[in-house]
Length: 402
Image 1 (spheres, helix red, strand yellow):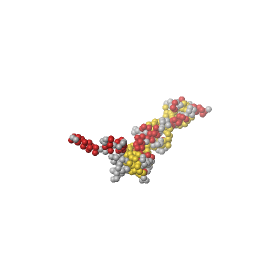
Image 2 (image 1 turned 90 degrees about the vertical axis):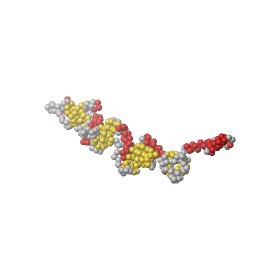
Image 3 (image 1 turned 120 degrees about the horizontal axis):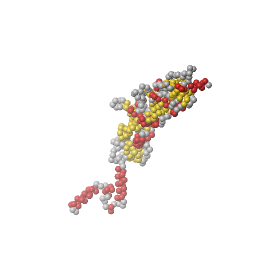
Image 4 (image 1 turned 120 degrees about the vertical axis):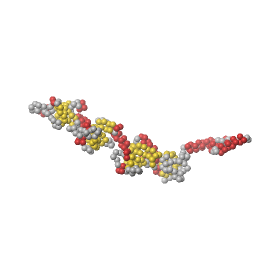
């Protein structure tokens, strides 16, 4: 054998020493193999390759990772799960959920490896994080219990509240609501052990402290409820309201407008010119804080969290619905003109008592009135939508003489 041939044979021999299993069998003459031995080895090789590629055999699971595994043993204290590591992982009974022996599932890693190489997992927490992601994307509201006040480590000031989900698919997950995201007027120190409705602002199981990162907003949830409530109204609707306070709707206003509560945390505005009161009076002279009133919806803006209301519009609608030609009513003189008098009939509705419809006194002259006088008049005619209401006095006097 030549020296070249000898070197080539040696090279092949050394290469074969590094081969094993299916790769080694491929180098052997099929004549020397058992029947189907090569095919059986190929199938086993593919199965093992698939198992290794689908496991974390070469990766050490860390706390707050997600990992797949199969339940192998169940005990009173918990279950053991094969995760492709030298040692099976442990899942406490409270964290295994509905998995049984032989079932695979997704798990959230609750602890780093111990000295023995074991980690603690939770199937319940993995499912909860998946559900929380869906809720965050959909904007759905959630309920959680406040279990502690959160303190800023540096300033030692209250920074918000800490919450925990106690029911449903989110059970066990903890989170945080900053002061800026609590409902207006809330005092975190008085909220411990109360259940609040909130909206998920951010959620990441891989960040944060021991329990991951979850930030909620009670304020955003309240805004959603308010917007939905506002959108349920339409201009012309009548609603009950409670007077909250008097404000200046703009810096240049001299008179006050009124903020009222119409339920579900919705605040509406009665602009100063939409407050009933004759003779024309200021809102804080007509109404009192805490007073229950009825108002009419004049404008709805759910996207801006606004709803405009009017006492005057509702009063006018009700007054006009009761008026017909021939009705006799008591009215107050609110203005005078060369051609007659303007009288307030009620509910912000005014009518004109023309000079031609005044009664005559004993000397044959037209009777006269001054602002603030009250007199009895008859409705002669009504225009569309209550415009141009004509009133009469001489018709009453004439009817009384018959």
